[in-house]
Image 1 (cartoon, rainbow, N blue to C red):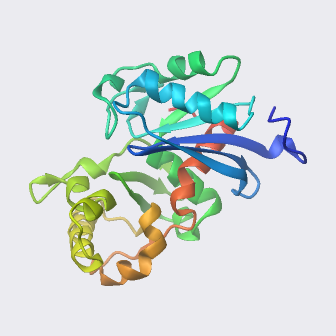
Image 2 (image 1 turned 180 degrees about the horizontal axis):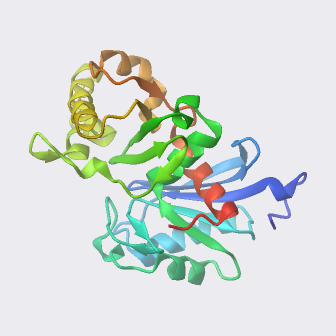
Length: 260
């Protein structure tokens, strides 16, 4: 694997991941043996409107700032099938039916680019480097952020593109009820927000019967304020990588050529 000339050491173990979110686009070089970042993470606000060209240009700028010339993994809040975006959650609707592989290769010439769903990438990273519960049995991995991302895992193997944040719970999409963005927007206390999360998890447990929920996203840093308030019978454990997971999973996918 090629990599930036500014980094010394075992360069073949490095990868580059960029995580596209509704509010920010974040990228870092990753040590693929440890799951740790190499150097600083760079974050740029997601352009508005978040059109394919605008987002791809921002991704390319993050890669340029890292002086990275190797394979790049990119996550999107979208169902990705055969490198075609089939949905657009918290990004511009013009993403639908975009050939994302072609788009990013145009903006990142002479590089191998792999694109996958953001929560799927985070789930893969958690399996590799995070909470051991993610590796065993039937697990639903959830990220709470601008929306609610999901990854279905069976003994560490991914069933991609589940997107259960869009399931209807109490007549609304789950992520419109219980994302961390909703908590912030409505200025909910952790107690009130946890009650909403609990309703969502009860519905997920009823439909899918997982052995465990693993919860991540930035708000998992304050898991002690809300996870103990949940009443769902299914165990709920906290992800280890938290909001680093998408970047790490993207770098892994690029290195292993995991393209849905």
